[in-house]
Length: 282
Image (cartoon, rainbow, N blue to C red; front, side, top):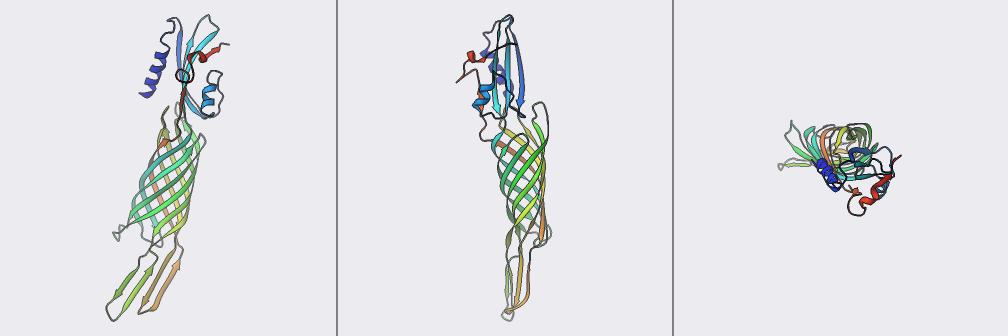
């Protein structure tokens, strides 16, 4: 709908053209390289040479040395912010296994071949055996290789990349028992934050001429915990266990991203006049 409105607006601008003139429209995306024409170079200069979508109207004027070209572009790459959420499974030694949901806030940069994300979030997990629910925080850096593009405007892509960061785990809690004759005290560390690393794989769809993207991702990572548990009976230590076991976490998520420095430029309004849109035919 928005693309149709944009084309209608462009056509309205050139409605004074002679009926014998041929008007052609074209839509394309410049991402791999900035091999621009003389009539659109100044538009790309205005956005710093960034990859852009472009809609162009060519007005062919038979018998004249110049044709008229009206075009508008919208940047593709750049900074973005977004939200991500989905299902999580967390298991391993040192804490309860858990199923639940997770969500995160994402900030990053998107280009053609490479993207990267910085995320901060939390997982709300429930141990199905013990019936306990706990919260685990996390933060990750995720560079991505966009290894396959398809679609009319290269608007769909598959990506893969590593993830490195920190993951929090729920460990054993403290407990205390005293009946006057015997005192039992269990001293645990409650929760711990460990180094995490893994892999992310997914799909992303962006919209032509819009700063919105959405996608699906599947990721997994392993991380270490600081498991500690000490038991004393009447002030006598009967167990003193400290380990650093590995755990793993798998996530299936949906995400949406919004461009932060999305920019549109045209040559038929504002700074540029229609007179700037002529070029000599070869």
